[in-house]
Amino acid sequence: MEMSSNPKIFRINTGSCNGCDVEIAASVMSSRFDLQKLGCEYIETSEDADIFMITGPVTARSLPFLKEVIKNHKKPYVVISLGTCSVTCGIFRDSYPILGPVDSYVNVDVNVAGCPPRPQAILEGVKTAIEILKRKNNEI
Ligand code: SF4
Image 1 (cartoon, rainbow, N blue to C red):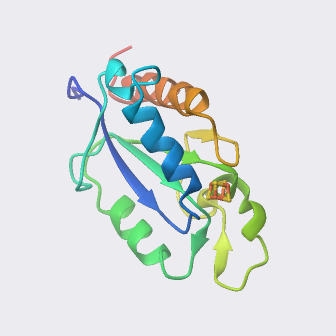
Image 2: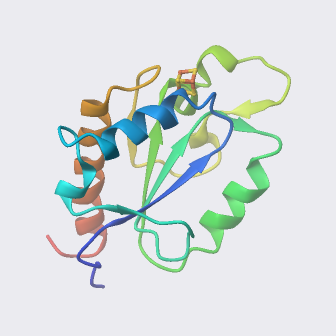
Image 3: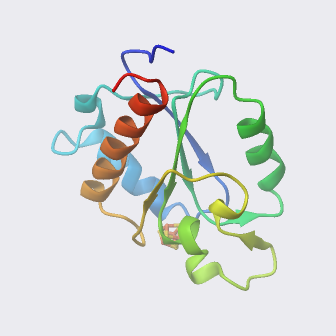
């Protein structure tokens, strides 16, 4: 299957404090870390996504949406679990609404640690995700 020329990233916040999301914004807006140089673009709806970038631990409230989006996705995709909370629940572990890390509920391809991860780490995670996506699309 052929990948679109510009990998499309759909973000899902499953319960982040928004710190990771601010770093994502920094990685997009700063010319130093510009994700568009990798040919990526953020999209507002999930249907065309090539990469799911997930921030935060999974909460009871976010789980149904997360499962629905992933279950209904019709094309090859890569999941980035971004930030310590997404990877291990971080400081929110043992909080009452927290169900677990993202990989308890969906298959994760790339983990990007950090609280929050630095823009450089986000960029490296996206580069890795693009390589995995090419393999899933049989392009390499
Ligand atoms: S990893 Fe840190 S910045 Fe990201 S959601 Fe958790 S507490 Fe917030």
